[in-house]
Image 1 (spheres, rainbow, N blue to C red):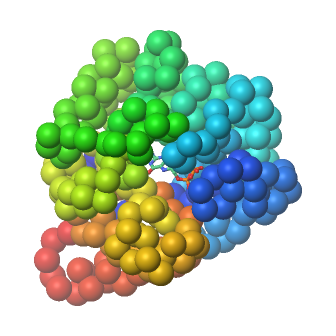
Image 2: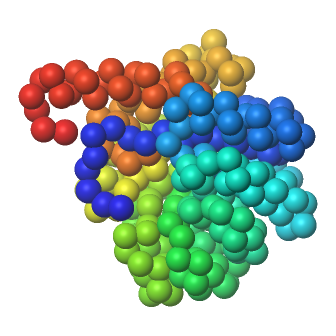
Amino acid sequence: MTGRQSRPRVMGIVNVTPDSFSDGGKFIDPAAALGQALKLMADGADILDIGGESTRPGATPVAEAEELARVVPLIRAIRAESALTLSVDTMKPAVARAAVAAGADIWNDVTALRHAPEAPDVAAELGCEVVLMHMLGEPGTMQAAPAYDDVVAEVEAFLMARAEVALAAGVSRDRLWLDPGIGFGKTLAHNLALLAALPRFVALGFPVLLGASRKRFIAALDPRGEAADARLAGSLAAHLAGAAAGVAAGRVHDVFETSQPLKVQEAIQTASGRPV
Ligand code: HH2
């Protein structure tokens, strides 16, 4: 997938975890997780991103068997109901492999295929789409004291280097996505610099995924957003900025609420007569 499209696709988040930062524990029960997936589909999701391990700062790593048990039956159950594009949010090649066998189309890897040495080869072998995300350090420590000389240049160089690794392993170019990793080892200033630089990331020629939904930087700008579920309006502002920059998809908790302003923005753009 390359090039500019009219409006970003909406990727709805389904976290089958006890500890995700905004919805941890809500959907750990398999029936609740499937219910949430079906709700997000009804709300207009173009893609669902299924995750069984939280990557929030300080999150505890999850054993492979536990992560498999959380995500694989859910992917199978959604696939039995729908042909919607499904993504698996995992850093473990074995989980990606089982998820693709169960019907997932995209491997969303917050470590950009760095978690295990075999990850690039597995991505090539699976033939699925792959999201390469930037993270500084590890989830446990990434927010300790993130520092860059030039955050935009460094994130861009990292993503292009990881794309090269994936390509060298045999992942086809039209299967790769890039994601600047909002909140993953970044201060408020770093997140804002990356959001402002989204057009530069889009210009790299790969589809860009943006994940700003309910993230902490919103509370840093408005303390009334201290609770994660009080950050919807700020999330929309960030995702509309992403749309204006030409990102291919937004990864969000609130699918209905995000797709509506994106449609309005697209309609205004169309009415303006300016090419998207
Ligand atoms: N953010 C989170 C998880 N996965 N994947 C991509 N590609 N981009 C992101 O920005 C991104 C991601 C964190 O959000 P969430 O899933 O809500 O929380 P948790 O990691 O605690 O499960």
